[in-house]
Image (cartoon, rainbow, N blue to C red; front, side):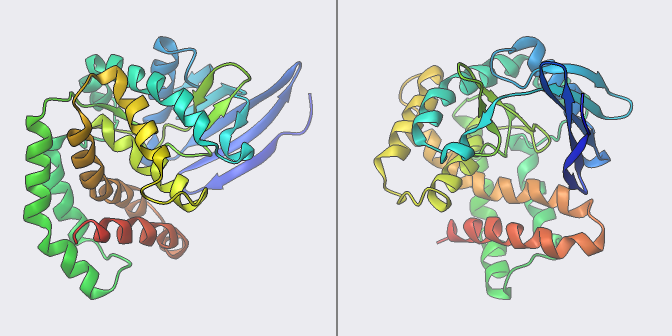
Length: 282
């Protein structure tokens, strides 16, 4: 019903706004690095239609998606913590339900960042040319045995691995006036589910300027953990500590797929993630 507008053009995906009778739809073409996203999104919508972007059509062979309009991003409303308080329990329920499909997702290309794979992933991270000072790289290298211990400790605590969005921040949570919907599953992996809140909390600190000890973080943690059961606060803290390193490992997959001319811009954000990981080694 109007001109198609390209709203995002990145090496990993292109998104177009498509006006139609009665509203707007969104077309997304994924690059090979996230070719798993169309199928994953369609599978999640089929099982969780009230909390995932509406999928109107999917072409797995061409890695294309046609999506309904999800409403307004919470970032456009100032990223209020109240929105996350309302959304996190339903996201945890989705993760719980998707544990049964974790291996199927891996078989269809969703990155495997389960606990057993993480020490090798950490070695791949250290082998990369990281946008960090040498001292910081050495701190990461020295931390490798401790990271392996964290992974082993988390594995023993028994939370099943599931879909982990890994980009769960103010631009990817939308409200349509009733439900909250999560969009943009192209950074997802199969991993410890608690890693998801690494990005959520980072944006609340950096965008909303909440102090690390702000009471909101405990409230949001408790809301997220409620569906998982009681007594998981220590497990959550271990997961959040390890999660910074896992987040950096995940970013190397995207970086390795970039053309050289795109890496410098990517590394501005990647450097923030890496420095957050380095801070966990203290």
